Length: 398
Image (cartoon, rainbow, N blue to C red; front, side, top):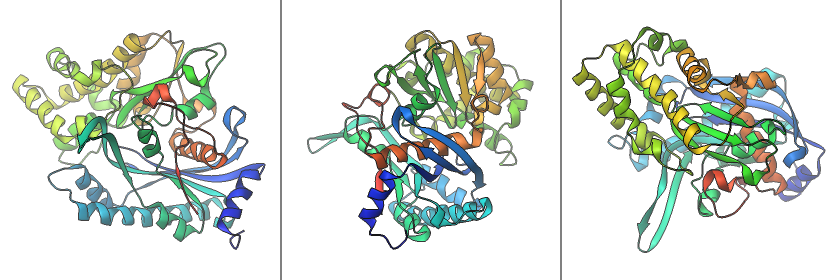
């Protein structure tokens, strides 16, 4: 198939009974790049899939450091962004080839690669210039490099088309959650806790027009930053929530955190490092210092902030929730999980309860979105992103 005309190859992919897809995801925490190899049958509500292999590859320290530079407006510049776009493309391609080799597959066995890339900046509110008003977003990890190094078609850059249609470009995983987790009998909240926390609400017996999704606020981002700062980089995050469980929540600091305007903002809403990154963490640390809080108490309080912001958004903006399906790195933080159980008092499940390994969920989402792209099916959710209409997200590189 490698010698097939690119457009003929695309048509051939659409006609296949099933497609073997590599999904790739790198989240706001920048822990590493997660890959999944999945066999997908059908599309839309008839989609079926089987996960064949999955793996997360950590970023080399020098690449991770350079990515974090791009988040910092004081240290980032256009030259660094331009350079890192192609470096990440090379790294992703290298990891895809290594992943396939370790899984016992050749690139020729694969039909398609789906890459989210690395978000380095997201502007969810409208800005105006010369009479033009728009939101914007930027994900890097050049998909043309991935296509060239692997010899495979790539679907990437999902968010911009939704923004072009008037949306926030996020959360883009809502359609995937709808395909996988909808239920006739139960109303479910699919809660991801990565760097940022986001929820997809699936009322029982819902159609795609009933689905609601939005960012609830920070997930692990502030917790990770506090732990890195106060251990001088010796720890990158609060393993299993053990530090938070040793501390005592400061009600004064927590109340101050919960006054952040994003928490009470009505959906659709999205956020990122622009609101909850290093500048905000600096203010948190200053406030904690004024209150004389210990390391453990600060971590306990910012962890409680993640929990309380999720709970507030459920009670304010969602209907009845019968159960929560929890994913992301926060699913392993016992302080977060216990906090949610204590506050919500409903069953909390994980992706593993549905046969989906936690590390595989987000790259699986990219693979399923790309499958819809190839089939020409709308794969956004307007009530989630605020878009004017349903559209096909993703750019196809042949």
